[in-house]
Image (spheres, rainbow, N blue to C red):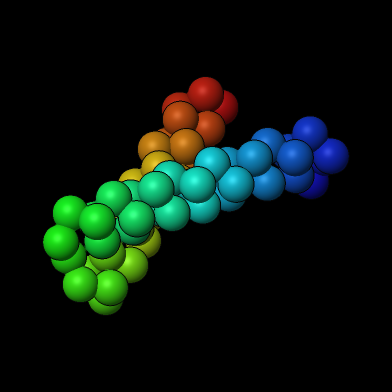
Length: 60
């Protein structure tokens, strides 16, 4: 992998982690228990990474 590909993957992971944290905090403050909030955050992270990888696959 080239350094640019590695950096773009790290950026995608960082953005996914930020989205997951925000979704989990928002769900927890909305009244979900901690396990449900973590699951919502994980789902948001998976969705954002899925969109990123789909965009990369469509670009090539």
